[in-house]
Length: 427
Ligand SMILES: Nc1ncnc2c1ncn2[C@@H]1O[C@H](COP(=O)(O)OS(=O)(=O)O)[C@@H](OP(=O)(O)O)[C@H]1O
View 1: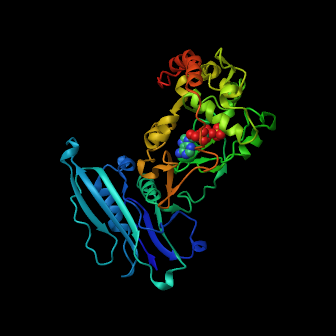
View 2: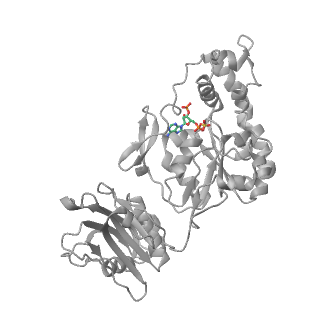
View 3: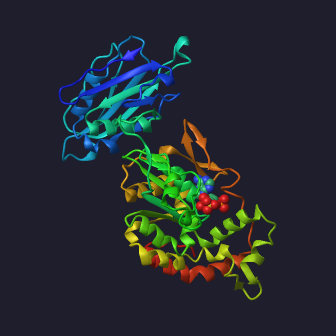
């Protein structure tokens, strides 16, 4: 069964709801596979700044999507909050529209004013027996890029998985990254990468390429081959925390792309060193943390040659980066806030990367993993980072040793705050 659409005068738009096997989905235009479960409500407002008039969107929906059969399974509802230009936000009038039912009347909504909030929900009605093995998809093509972009975001955000791209002739290719997560090791770099991955305009390489620290002799083409395939409206991102402490890395990265954007996740260097210790302890038998961190516990002599301590002297490493890159090209992510409030940390990253706002609290299941670490919500279920390798149990470290390490790091932290213009209050 097909939901056929017509061409309008100003937007040559066609939209098709197809019910067929997944292999059969046409790969011209965009196809979205419906989520298994009714999708959550989606606030489309961030994507609709490019469609200032409600009338325009309604026109698109009314004239381009209609049910061809009585028992079509797609419900689409829009909740709009209209606002006449210049009027205060709280004077908006929410209204509920149900589109896409053969019998339903065209939505009765005043088409004046700017859209302030638009909520779109889609759901699959109970599927009849004979369609159990089939997949449904919404098929959208539009010559109007703005409308299409907004719908793309709304549909992907409400759980529809895009199957093909809007520009049919475009083939995804491996491109060099536009942004790199350079570190810091054990500060939450994996979490940042995995969270960024949900953004439709981002593709990430899973494994760490270690190009600018260990594999530089492999050459740029080797590096490009490690990148994910991206379309022209996407950016590739990789993470290798080893870069932050590699003296040569800043210049090497600059030589590849002087305009690249760098992301640096940081957390209290004392906690970071314990996390580093825990990771090393899974590979080797180690002495207690206290005797590794201090050369002499009674004298309080810090073991500055131990890498777990050295990495935490952020200001020294940062110096190398600031000799090559302006601070404006480096965004510092607070690793603690990435745990407590991932959506707001990610919003800042989206802004820094120039991405449309996409990631919201609804993408996260907070306090999901070990009661502390947020998990991603994928298809309605919490999806946590490596349960064995992330969020490890930390040993209880003697208070006096913690104190000594905090004293040791204090001046370096202060310098780091100055360098990046942010105070993390670690002490
Ligand atoms: N959402 C979520 N889930 C699990 N873990 C999280 C999360 N956000 C941040 N973290 C913290 O990330 C720490 C691991 O940091 P990295 O990913 O940078 O480690 S690595 O350098 O790639 O090995 C890891 O360190 P440990 O707690 O010591 O295991 C976590 O504290």
